[in-house]
Image (tube, rainbow, N blue to C red; front, side, top):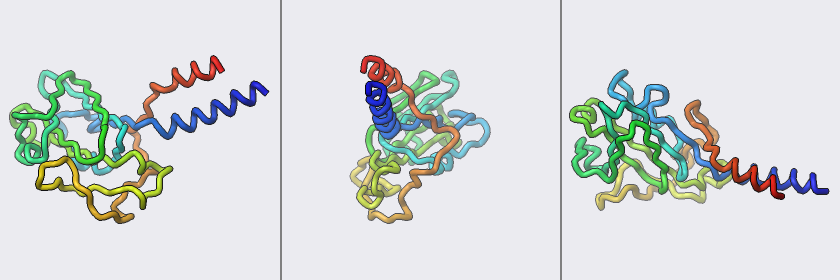
Length: 187
């Protein structure tokens, strides 16, 4: 009886953990965040599905690059002078906490103009496979004139991301496993 209870508890926890974990995406895959190699970061981003709770990781040589989160207007003009946030560690992990657009660029002179920019479109976590795609809002690819990070757009099934599409660079975060282990150990 106790073994059956532990097995059921494990299956329940494993199911909950699998649904709640966000993916980890390394920007630029193996190339990382660089001006070398003529990488199209926006093409890279458009091939991924980003959801609230996912993490993006910028890996780069911090002697030659940085990461600045900027507004849409600053993104379009390659202006990193007044960033929302600046990252300089060379291995920056950023958790996507809200739906909408996140705009990033390298603030080193000339790098943004050379294409070291990325627009990450984040959809609500409820658009993962377990949710009904018709019940969730869609967000347009251009921000509103009020300067907000996103604006609602009419929902169409064709515009929804494919939640079953995976990528080799998307890894599941494993930080919940120690909690699960402790839960099962003391059950």
